Length: 88
Image (cartoon, rainbow, N blue to C red; front, top):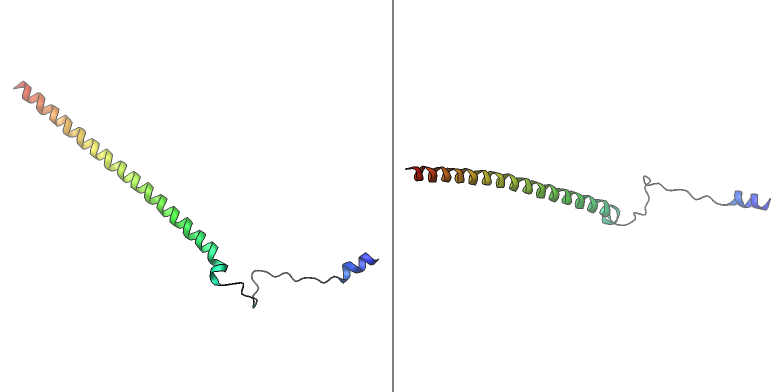
């Protein structure tokens, strides 16, 4: 019986939700939104840098392939000219 009285006589605490407004601001703007904004900025910066490095790598690879093809073309032309000179 005493236990039942204790359970019914206890005061209830009201649960506050994030959507409710209160006079207690909870700190400045940075303390409230700083962590998500910094996290978003870090992820965006890291993603941008990763795409930039990937682009540079692919661009250099394309340049290198074109340069190798040009050098091979010049070597073949030089060999053809040397063969033509030795035949004369």
